[in-house]
Length: 249
Image (tube, rainbow, N blue to C red; front, side, top):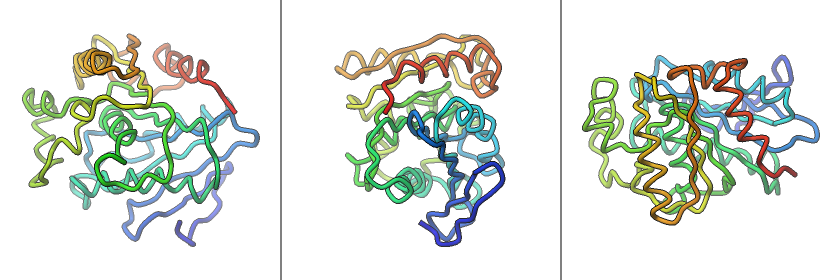
C-alpha cells in the first residue's frame, strides 16, 4: 500500500498500489459495515473512462452501510491491456489485505460492462498465476462482457477485445467464460434493450456456468446499458436487492 495515501472529503481515502498514475483506489470505510464492495468501472477497458463512473455507486452503497473500494486500473491507451489491466485489478483487490487485515467476508466485486468482465475474472484469478491475498465471496456483474470470444466475433465496440488482448498468449487466462466453473457465486444483471453489450453475454454465461456446476443467476432489468449505474433507477434498485440478500458480518 502506498505511503502517499491521504484522507479526502467525505471519509474517502486515495490509496495507491503501484507507481503508475492509474494504480490507485478510493477507499470509503463505514463503521460496523455490512461488508465490503469492490466497485470496478467499465468503459470497454479504454483510458478515457475512469473511476468517476463508480463514485455515485460507492456513495450510495456507503449510505446503505457498505464499505467500498472504488478501483482504478491501467486501461487501453494508458499502459493497459493484457496482462497489465489484470495485474492491476488483482493488486487493487489485494489492497484490502492491508486496509482491513484479517477481514473475512463478505467481500463483493461489483462491476459494470468491462468492469463486470474484470469482476468475474477476479474471482478466478488465483488459478492462473495471479496473487490472491483476498478472496471474493460474491460477484455482481452489471451488463458484463463475460465471453471474450463472442465479443471479439461480434466486434463489440469496434473490436476492442483485440486491443485488450494484444499479443498476450493464453487468452483463456483472461476470459471468464473459459474459467468455468468458479467456486464463487455470480449474479448477472442485464437489460434486453442494452445496445452496448448484448444481453446474450450474461444469459449465455449463466447457462454455461450452471451446466458446469457453478452457482450463477440472472436478473433481467430495464433501462438499457446505463441505468444499472444510476442510483435511483429501478435497475440500480435490483442491484441493491441482490446485495440485501447476502449474509453480512
